[in-house]
Length: 130
Image 1 (cartoon, helix red, strand yellow):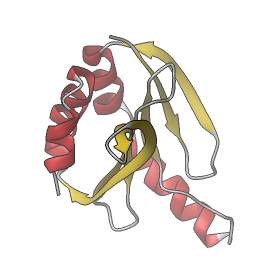
Image 2 (cartoon, helix red, strand yellow):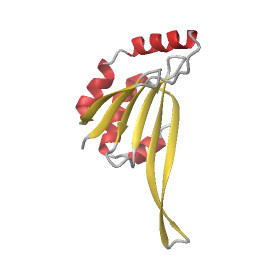
Image 3 (tube, one colour):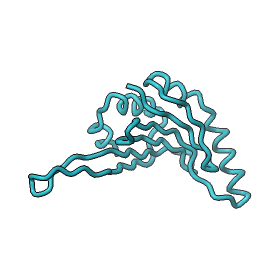
């Protein structure tokens, strides 16, 4: 499976990486210069500019699920997982809703494993992370 990947910079601009498979997504994440991203965010913050956490995003073509892995200001990592949950109203009527799972202080040495888990579609494992 391929997911659309991008890197969003602290100034909200982003660099589209295209549709990537899991090995290429892992490589793009691990080879990116996150220290330079952190330095850029610090410079913007000194100037009083509006900033966001530099991050690496993975999206399905239909936008049903996404994973955004973000570098926090204290140097730790967090991620936001968005997914579509199917349920039933009154046990009869199908209903779909977008839900979010946010995990702070995620170890950087587990990010590649997280990317693989997302690509496998093992969303229950991602939801179990906290």
